Length: 338
Image 1 (cartoon, rainbow, N blue to C red):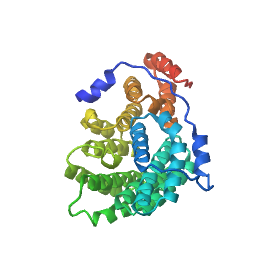
Image 2: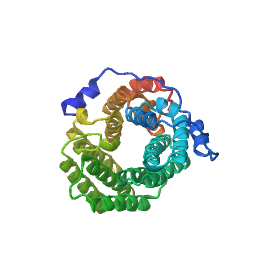
Image 3: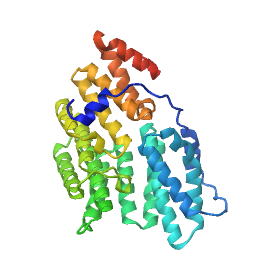
Image 4: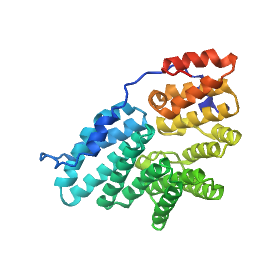
């Protein structure tokens, strides 16, 4: 790989940290708890801090921390949405939309499609109850992701495109938040379109997202999107892989300024995609080194995700003799066998 930032990531000290298993059962019990929330004092400022902490920990790939605290947070937010009135209730719904968004994202990474759909739907309902166009647009991203993960790619494409078009009607003087949500919706739609095999729709949505990134002018984390020009490049890497073009994926990966990506989750995802691209080209040594770099940046992105562990198994199963021992040793640290 060329490019100082990505090259440094590949050559960083290697190793992984085993983390606790995510406690999905407690989240499941909370999502299906339809009892009346208990009365008690509601501190919106404290809830806002807790939601921000959940978002930050998720983006830093500290998934175990997020999962441990989500059940209690969701219960408190449900109580706030029920008992508060006026602007405070609208704010509570906006916070709930964000919390359910994080919940759905965690569940999608764990490939729990049913619970992810439930949490994504809760996020959209809370966003509409908040009456905030930005929150509605933001939650449209996670419902698109849930649709796509369930194999409903056409519906996912239409959902993302429709939400982006509704925002576009009001973007004569867009704020950074507006552009970030709008661009992120287009990127989500491009991934969904690629899953249908429609290259034209994919390219159209991706180019519109790139234009939004250019208008924004930098990579940032407005509205927790991590959107910007480098994020668009990361999606170009992923989309090239979806169309089976590993060479193009690597070309785009070399253009990414890794240090400009504002969150570890995005950095790790890029490195995992790059590792897959090298594996597709039978460059097992580079695939393994990039995979280990991802584990250094975000250990739980490798140790806690089924898709990442499948990549480890694929490298282990197909590695040539020159790489096999290193691959086997690394897989053993993760508890992975061929």
